Every structure is written in C-alpha cells, then in structure tokens.
Amino acid sequence: MACCCTKISRCKNDITKVLNARSALQTLKSNNGTLDTGLSELGRRMQEMATPDNMNACVTAINNLNKDSASTISAMISLCGGKISALQSDQARYEREDKEFHSSC
Image (cartoon, rainbow, N blue to C red; front, top):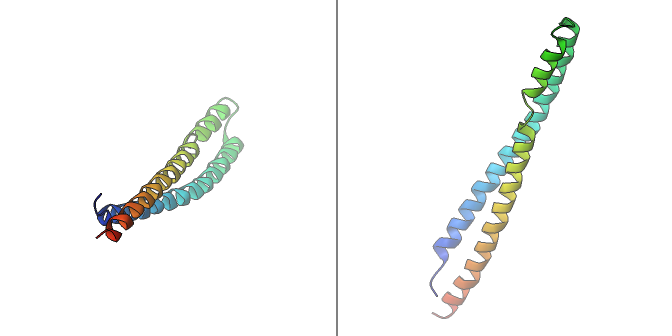
C-alpha cells in the first residue's frame, strides 16, 4: 500500500477536464439545434426559388449537411458521462487506499 495523493489529484484534474469537455459539447449541441433551424429555413426558401427539376435535390442536399452531427455530439456527451463516472470511482478507491495508508503511518 502506498500514498495515492498524486493519483487523487490527477483524477480530480481529469474529472474537471472531462466536465469542461462535456459542457462544451452540450453548448455545441444547443448551437447545432440553431444550425438545424437555419438549414430548415434555407430549405424552405430554396423550395420557393427552385424549379421543379432541382427542388428535391436542393432540399435533400441541405438536409444532409448536418445529418450526423446531432447523434455524434450526443454520443460524445454520453462517453464523457461514462468517463466521469469511471474517474470518480477511481478517485474514491484511491481516497480509501490513501486514508488507510496515512492512518497507518
């Protein structure tokens, strides 16, 4: 058994970094909703201006511009949550070990 103070400090730093990353991703997700709204409006306006020959192609192209980003951002937020839980579990384990070590000195 050894002192775990350094490991505890690293866990705390890593948790803070992942929390900040998750917060940035949540902001990105919110901004992505705004982008979706803008793309929908662009698609609507394109329908007003496009000819029947190219209307469907234009609307489809616009809708596909941002298709995968929402699910990717959500997946990344979930990964951050899992990493935070794992780090918190490690930190708790290190704190228990550290308490035992320091109480035996």
